[in-house]
Image (cartoon, rainbow, N blue to C red; front, top):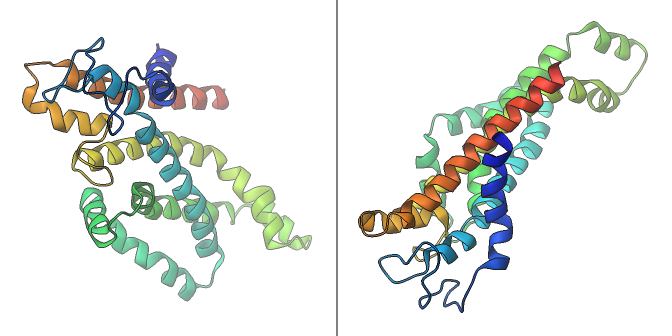
Length: 249
């Protein structure tokens, strides 16, 4: 069941654009009525569903991967730095954490017109990831194995890459599943609010916003993209939980 929940929206999102039917204007057909009918403007809903998931999924994956890449480096640097440098690295992130996620997305998008949504979502996740990595690195750094490696003359780089990072891998993997789901939520919410995508784009979240006024005329124009987003989020969480249970057993 969990694999089905994950596989269906991923297949539609990643492979859908290759199978989108009909001639297009700005990426969306205005002439054909496919399996799910048309929306209030006469656009083929089935074609929009096939075209609208790839940007959502790729943006969420890129934002999450970028947050972990930058957050890991940031957190490790803070954990190994003197107290003053640690404070200088972490306090700006505390300011970012104090700002609600959607408000931060709206503010950054307004200050950087045309900016990539993936960068904005990555900025939202960065404080949490950096703090998590720093906390793990500080705890692991007090273990006897690390002290033994230091006494043997091992370099800080070797200690970090050979012991600290592998020791925190399970914690980071646990967080990654939840973080990716959060990225999907933020990207979908931003698209719903019109941030990062044009209002006439073939995007699942934009479809929900654009067609909600005509829900009773053609409910599939809203329900199809909304169900795919929900299936993807639930499938990711269930798959991540299953993988962690296997790793722990």
